[in-house]
Amino acid sequence: MKAVVYNGPRDVSVKEVPDAKIERPTDVLVRITSTNICGSDLHMYEGRTDFEKGRIFGHENLGEVVEIGSAVDRIKVGDMVCLPFNIGCGFCRNCEAGLTAFCLTTNPTPGVDGAAYGFADMGPYQGGQAEYLRVPYGDFNCLRLPDDARDPQKQLDYVMVADIFPTGWHATELAGVKAGDWVVVYGAGPVGLMAAYSATLKDASKVMIVDRHPDRLKLAEQIGVIPIDDSKVNPVEEVLKFTNGKGADKGCECVGYQAHDPQGHEHPNMTMNNLVKSVRFTGGIGVVGVYIPQDPGSPDQMYKQGKISFDMGLFWFKGQHIATGQANVKAYNRHLRDLIHAGKAHPSWIVSHNLSLDEAPEGYQHFDTRDNGWTKVVLHPTH
Ligand SMILES: NC(=O)c1ccc[n+]([C@@H]2O[C@H](COP(=O)([O-])OP(=O)(O)OC[C@H]3O[C@@H](n4cnc5c(N)ncnc54)[C@H](O)[C@@H]3O)[C@@H](O)[C@H]2O)c1
Ligand SMILES: [Zn+2]
Ligand SMILES: [Zn+2]
Image 1: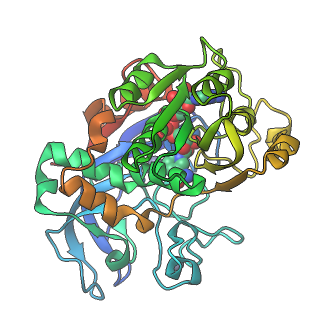
Image 2 (image 1 turned 90 degrees about the horizontal axis):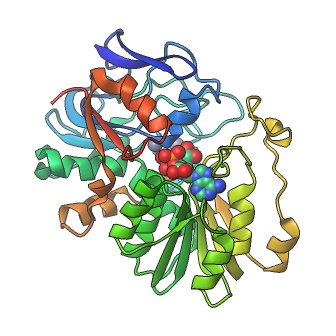
């Protein structure tokens, strides 16, 4: 089969690789019709993780089931399914508690809980930017989709349920967003836009988003979110201005450890400290932007060991709370699917490019440089 393979920093190509296949009786084999490029892929693409050369990328996957293992009961050949980026077992303590991002059995790496497709340090699983994908524990991990998932436009909505829609939703859950809240989101990439969208769906009364890419800020504006361009204004002062000098009730971090200033210099503590300043006393902060335990490639001396200089004093003084981590996609994906099916959510409004698998290298290149108009790229390996 054809697949998007990592060759080294900023170098991917589409190659012939051995076909994905059923390896265990609980597996399901999916023919991939839509698979997204994610900001998380970019950390790996840029060589800022230990992602292995020759491995297949792709953790935001949707397609049609073409084969099932002998121990699969619920999922049938022909089902359209969306796969959470997390691979859970369904029977460990964390999966039972709904914390499928931290499954205790699917990642064989000692000391690491949680697995995902085509993801550094998240187990040996291949990604789905390929014609076929092996899905472990298919009955547990496949989210069945209604028939309208075969409609190409609707499919773009559903494929956002593999990761970024639930992840944006998770950011608002971690922050504790409730109806009526004032919310600030740092980062207007796909994840930040989905966090702002989720806050809007939860009836937040005011949502602000900070970034410096006009195209991304413009998309946010389309759903009634207040855009804040930090290349032109001080984002903290601007948030305070919109919140009677008090700060937002809740804040979402949707940038991660490669946070940088508008000139491009990385400051891994930048968004965290801006959030502490932008959120009111006793407010909540949800962090879904990725931070990693070691980052030898960081230009920041402290962050090479995964440490940041955090405004602990102000954070404590303001009585804020913070929650973090990968999104437990299965905790939300049924509900978000049903919102889409009912026509009440349209997360595909951020999709800018639909490409064939062969066009993946240019998709990576443009999305990585955050070129104007490249907000979210969906690859279509098969139809
Ligand atoms: N927790 C999870 O489960 C999960 C899932 C998916 C993605 N992620 C992570 O979420 C983060 C965002 O993903 P994405 O796909 O939106 O990526 P992205 O890289 O396209 O978007 C990040 C955005 O942040 C902006 N930015 C950079 N520095 C900033 C700063 N100091 N202030 C404000 N904005 C700033 C950039 O301009 C960019 O638009 C990544 O770290 C990704 O790995 C986490
Ligand atoms: Zn992703
Ligand atoms: Zn588990």
